[in-house]
Length: 250
Figure 1: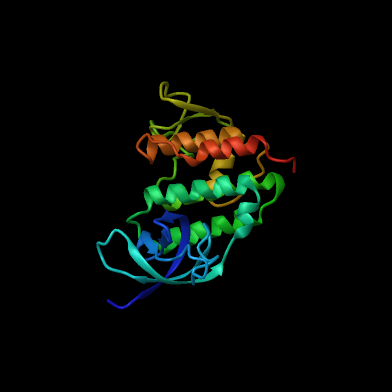
Figure 2 (figure 1 turned 45 degrees about the horizontal axis):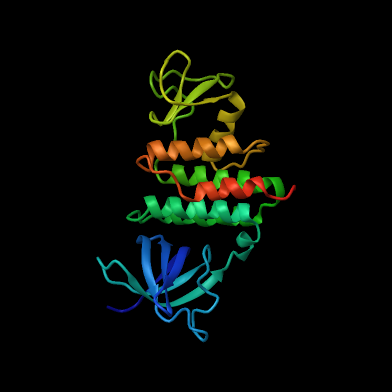
């Protein structure tokens, strides 16, 4: 089969054997693809400095349907996004996006998901200071919406009652949305009106101004664990919550 050229976003890479590297690539036509770059760790490899996480370009693959690992023949890098690694909060948020994609988009061939991921990483790389975490949260919630798991935030997930903007509600993780005060029970976090409005904005791809981000990360992680990831938390979140505690003041 001739080699196929596909747009690709590098989600993760790790060493394989003495000289090779295995990658997880997000592509619009095949979802998340595993690929092996043979000889990539050799000093004079044609892949030198091209295969860092979050880089984007065109991958030339010896693609064979049903094969677990495709062979990477070449990679034409168009955007490196090395700025993400210069701040550990950026890197932690980007790693969370990558992990979410690897756990949910394996068989999801979608140009929309690919575009959403690249746009989110661009926004994250460009954010500075106190805007970094809101940029990461917005990218994550927007990706959740594009993956088809957006929470119900405007009406009660139990009784269907419309919620006014000033209403406080329970974010019921298992129900996949908010529960009004007239529907007791459920497990989740109380959302004051401003927090619910912020999540609505982020799902729509609009970055809000958030002063206290810790609670938002917890709500996102628990919603994903209950409603998207079959009870298994994201491994990247503890790292992100750790580095944000020691981040320099903006």
